[in-house]
Length: 522
Ligand code: URA
Image 1 (cartoon, helix red, strand yellow):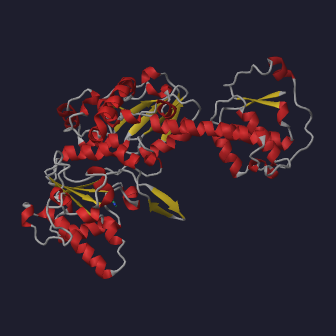
Image 2: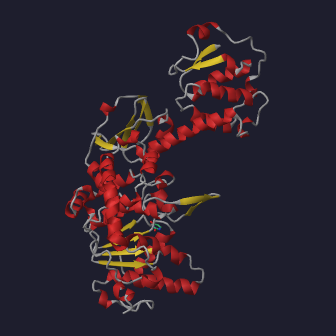
Image 3: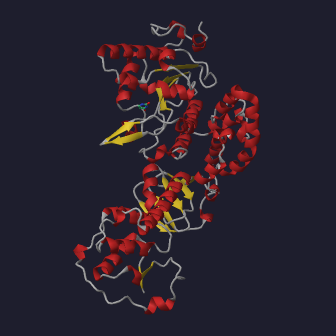
């Protein structure tokens, strides 16, 4: 048995392994020492004195193969802290180069299973890192003026270098450091650098956004849906200490059984009221004090925050997985106290790349309709219910996918915070998703468009739902398309006139102005 000294990196292991493969050294004769392993398996004596047998076969350097499929697996396995990982990888590459070319496709082969399971552990750890890193504001760079954020995280495996590019892409707009006990990553807007690990005392513990997170978490917490086991497996206790929302978990959990009983006792109507009261920042609801805040206090909290702070908190949101595939969070834009707010469904392909709402084909159609309705885009606050593009890839295109109810639910605090900051006089929701998310889960867009909605009276005096511009883009027949376009302009005109009773040309689908009268059949 010979000990081969390497640095604990895949590159170093690859270099040494190539040499060993060339000499035909079998895996059972070597031990890779990267300076981090415990050597209990072998005595110092064994390691130092026993050499491997004289190589039986010398290979040409160019004949050594490290196939892509192997390297993909090796990249993950190399991050696992398992002592044996280098030897297992060497065994696999040795066999791949010695007559077992299809080794990796034999899923029943114990070595392959072992490597896959090590890789899976690393993937899970990376997923946790992406979900549970919470940046805290640390200051501002005196030269560039860029804000600086710091996060403390304790990964199980050595995943910092592999996972840092994800954070650089997601949080490109501010400087950040992710500190861990083994390795630290730093982003300055241009490149990622790495330094040695530090201890947790070097990471800031609190900042002004933490209260906001706690309010948010408490308000989305639904006691009737509490599944402690699932919650602990998704958010293992180990990560709790670094999450601003964590101090609430025990308290909310303890309260939950009592609350669930009350909800059952109160029956279905009361339950619905209660669930909608969970909607964070819906400060007018009587039950919002779950976070220990009165409605007025919750509202005041949000009003204290700047748009920028809310935007940045939205950028850091990992409450659903949509952030993983999207390029960036697309927050709303427009005058901070716009009279009119238009709320769409989610950014599309072009919005995802540009980082701005309504810049793609649907946005261009909206622009034309706004102009015809006598409205000026620059005077409108434009946003979406969901802040990340959800898509599936087909060939080279990214095809829009509707967000699930849970994804919409998790994203809702951001749009509600925007409404509470802007306090628009009029809100127009575009399409079914926005109407059902904000007004009523059973909202029927084609029947109820253009009617004044009373459900959101606590957020804006006038709320109107209309169709989504992409509905118009889908109209194939030109006469129908023109007709639908003019109905859409008609609905937008409701916002252009200050007194709704002076509506210019009522949509043929509308019989009454108020949705309530419509619903009651009057
Ligand atoms: N569709 C939307 O709902 N929002 C956008 O920003 C773009 C397309």
